[in-house]
Amino acid sequence: IFTTGELPSSFFFSILFLHVAVPLGLLALYLVHVSKVARPTHQPPRPMRLLALGGLVTISLLWPFGVEASADPTRLLGTVQIDLFFTALLPVFSKLPAWGVWLLTIFASLAVLVGVPLATRPKKKPEPSWVDWDLCTGCTTCYLDCPYEAISMVKRTGETAADSRRSEFVAQVNPDLCVSCGICAGSCAPMGVGPPGRTGRDQLLTVKKWFMENDPKNGLVVIACDKSFAELPEPNLYLVGCIGSLHTSVIEWLIRKGVAGVFILSCPARDCHNREGPKWANETIYENREAELQERVDRRRVRVAAFAGTESIMARIEIETFRNELEQLKETPEEESPDLDTECPEKILDEEI
Image (cartoon, rainbow, N blue to C red; front, side, top):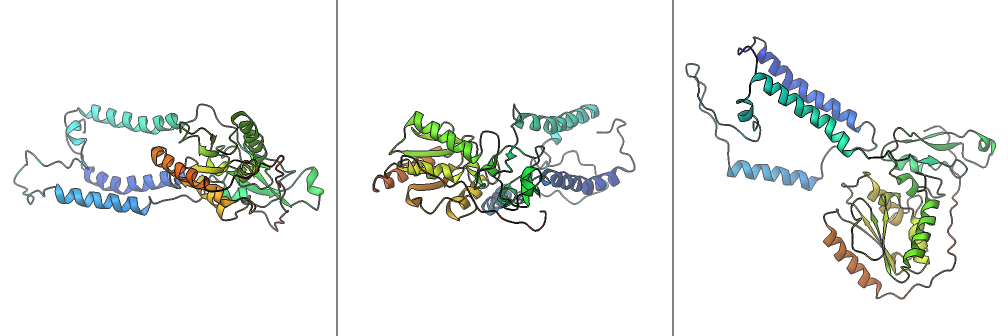
């Protein structure tokens, strides 16, 4: 691949250097990649690792790559075996001139580096979350839950700073880091944080309007992620941006309005578009995490299940199973005006987080 047709004297040193520099460079890029996220996961799930290892071992046993004969400095080999796993491009490169190899390599690299970000970038930049300091109690839950470390705790300023009844610290969103996933909205008990139009209070208004338009009373409401299950054939399908952004007050309101049950259909824990949505949804519903589903809600009428977007058939089977279970329960009476508690006690922080 050298234009002169001869190998420079430093060729083997360069190869040795690249063997060390390239992995270190990839490691540096990887660290940059995960530097803006909280709790990055560095390993694939254990079953996937074992499956990949087993597959490679099986392939190597069934189609082993032969070892060349011992090197003989007096002979120049005319042909060598090619391992398509590591050197698949070698047959292509061997038929191209030196400038063609470099051009193809540079073009392919730029296509990946530029094309992937452009292809995955949203058409319109979503609006970042915001915090209503009049409602913020300084509980730090949204700060801890944010998958992108876009929320920090700062000292309260402004008109409410002089009120001794309020927390000393409040949440603040960095709009440059926020991706508008809305997980903070699902973790705020007083419903004081979230993207515009998607805070807990906004969610209650939205579900009330949806309820009036669809009238799902005595039926099963399926709340699902709009990125994976937008086309799910369910009569009472209620889509949200991320299951982790769903405020538990929406579930309670639906149950108290007389629906037979609420089936929450989330992405798998390691396949969430917003990384940790299913994790926080399960903890607020079943483990009494802040903004928890209240004890007064009949848990028999709430079901959470995780399926990938390609597993819609399995998801529908699980939904039908839950629907059959609900038929064994008595109908829940509708409450005319379900009164939901949107307040929570203040928490005092001694130092900035």
